[in-house]
Length: 254
Image (cartoon, rainbow, N blue to C red; front, side):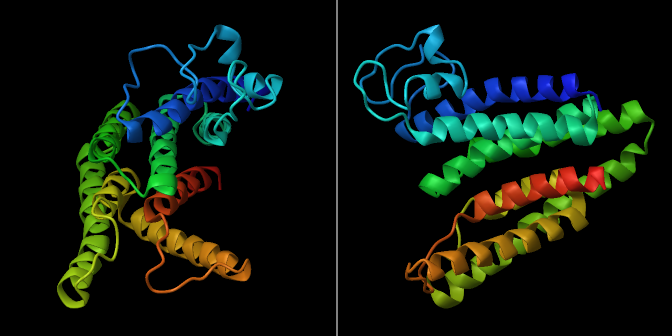
């Protein structure tokens, strides 16, 4: 794999990550993400070109707005670096091919959902639906590759159904027996959307890895002195989307 191709993937990822970072901050405030000029989150000053170079602009300004000196939300840089990571790893796993594009498409959507759930415990249904619908790219790739379309469709449908059922069942149990919500209402739909991408085995592995990651996070929080009990919440959507992407990349590299 040529370094130039990886760098190109990272460069594109930085730009898309910049958009993802802005979207993750604006969507909870019900602000538009497509139209309108980029602006400071604190004072509203319209950003110039020099203010919008991913990562570098933040470093050059000392992590503060040039006008009001308010700290720049760290989520901007986190999203930009995350977008670059997706760009590089997608090209690494799938090459500069339609498959590499499909991996990146999943990864960038997963990143936006992960950021929203991590900070707001919120998985917007339109974004979850977009993740599921974009899995339609897989039959297209199968057709281009000469693979069996019926098998691809069966794997997708079964993965989506299993993913939804794996979380819908315990959610119903919590609601009916314990009379409380055991998880976010969108979590079963999210795992179903992930299942459309990764199939039955992939969706099981995703849930197992997400559970292991959740236990690790909870253990770390407890060791740091944070109180953890049955009412504590972890962003399951974040854990699932990141786990699914890691498995998607690793499964193609190994």
